[in-house]
Length: 358
Image (cartoon, rainbow, N blue to C red; front, side, top):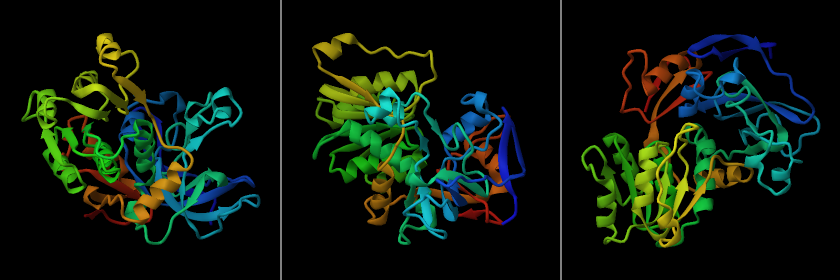
């Protein structure tokens, strides 16, 4: 293996360069992972545009990755060279107040691979050996790239803790589609997915949603959710968009005693209007969840291995690493480039020579 590799480096907002960089050196407790597939996430666009983690640049983004263990540090156990591995991207100190309470996501020095430090839009990435999880051969290469996003959905589902037969509304058709599929897998009923993209709403139906609501065609989505639940409202709502308006709608969709799971990230400083009256006399509840961590990775792998979650309807295309920038613009638009609304999940593959459309 040479000492150089190709990577996509965000050097400054709107300045990404496909260039040669040093292959990461690993310690005795780390694994050098040869990246096979890395999915594109909305946060990759946010970092590229400087709206998130601008203080961390220059950086190699990409956190929805998996790969093959190329080199294994001498202190690492449970992983050997050639193993297919997914990586828990969460890096915690293990000793702060929150880590001691097993709240690693709240760690005072919390960082994530591909979000705060170099990640998977490269030929190789360095990772702690203890963060590596083996991927069985039965999980195909594309499904394996859903392990990381599925961990975030699992963590939110655990926080929400919907019981059998509970009604669930999901606002958003990005990861919201996976939220809907997991709610269905937990035997929630009905599962209602709300969004503005007809193609993605159809995918949500294929993946288990009982009802879908196109908010472009149904201006009063709150009234429609109430209609579908006999005027009561849903037991749980997952907000997976990240806007003040949809948070306000989510709170109004809840039945008395219901719970809002906050997942979509609204920019700091912005606020949504939620009535304190409803917290008190309506006994409504709100909890938040931001990512997956720890054995959420093992759980995600198991759900994919046994077909409990099948992400195939979400596959759109795969592109070579060199084409990352154009794929970002195709997904998210900007600078006069029209967003392709038919795209769902786009994968980036360092070894791919030409794009593949599913």
